Amino acid sequence: MDGFHACVLIIGIIAGLASGGSAGEPLPAPTAAPATLPGSDQGYFLIDSLPREADVYFDGKFVGETPVTIDVSITAKPAHEIRIIRGGYVPWSTTYQGNPRPGQTFTVMASLVHATASGAIQVTSLPSGALSTLDRAQSRETPYTYAPVPIGDHEVSVYSPGYQTYYTTVNVQKGETAHVYAGLSLAIPGGVLAVGSTPTQAFVYVDGVYRGVTPLIAGNLAPGQHLVKVSKSGYHDWTGEVEVEAGAEAAIRPTLVKDPEPLYGTVSIMSSPPGADVYADGVYVGQTRAGSPLVYRGVQPGVQEFHLAMAGYQDYNAVGVVRPGENYDLAISLTPDPQAAAGRISLVSLPSGADVFLNNAHRGPTPITMHSLVPGSYDLLVRMPGYEDWQAEVGVAAGETVEMNATLIPRPPGTHAQGAIPAYLAPAGLAIAVLLCFRRK
Image 1 (cartoon, rainbow, N blue to C red):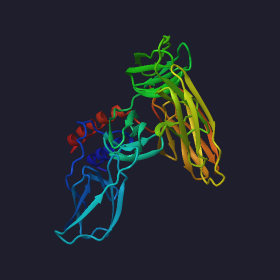
Image 2: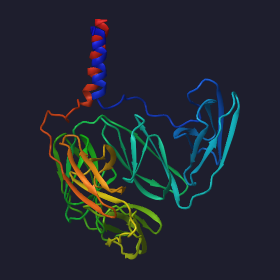
Image 3: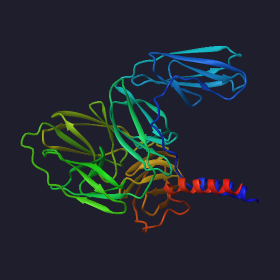
Image 4: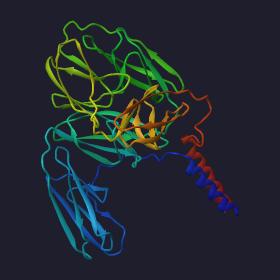
């Protein structure tokens, strides 16, 4: 093998070991530019909708917003899947049989129907092609529009190998599309934040994302400033910025001040098993979790109706009275569906916020409940920058929930995950390899 080909091989090895992507300007908004599919002689699909500005997916690929024209080869497969999504409307889909002749245009018009009490969430990222996860359940490659999505607050995470996982909470309004843009940063070892409070059992939010109740340890935090809010019904919120350093633990313990005239109450909801979707007066609140309650803040005093639903269990309905300045605790044992054919895995970690992989597929951050698992054996991996990987083989049975607890061990300074090189060294390594190759050529 000559020197030039050896250098090319080195570049390939570095690129294969490195996880990550290139940085650049933020992604532009979707446009209705034609999408060209493979082939020589071309025909066209003109896809439109009433109302317009709906997202169009052609054979599983996002191609723009209506109206959009798509080039297609006359020799392409003769069946095309078309899916149209717009916030506040029921998704529209069809299978179109046949291809146009050269220069011919097939027109597809979709009349969208209003969805009740729902909207949509559009997720984009830089780099694109990352894995977005909605409410720790549905996962799709970015860019993607989730619809219909119940009105209320929803969790979104965006994961890409070699990058820091992005988390946010987004509110969905009836008939509207909420937009999430995740500008991913290269993964570097982060730190953890220990949060206590006086009184205890206060709700903790880090950078707007609910992390649990005090006392807690929140992990997977990038080095730098983080906005922390500690809240408890009947008390004024405490808000402050906390500096987190790589490989270190920051700690705060604020003393909350009584609110003499509280206007709202809160509701804390736990279920056994965890992982149930919760609705309050028809509004989506979130998913129950292991280790800490799901919290519903800013609740108007009065009678509230709650509905819990989870695959493999019977729905549960409850009515409670919320009083200003007080927390209403709701603890529910769900009744299994005797016909359930799938199982679940519920996982918590210390610190929380670790990335979870099931059979090598990213599923979201801890704490998490993974539903609809076919009975059998699963490989479970829990990973957080700066910590040793945690792994287990888990057996899942029909109608059962396996509860797991992963305690992560800090990795010694100066070491990296086995089989990988630091993401921030990859660009430098590639640049050096390219220079050597051209000098040798």
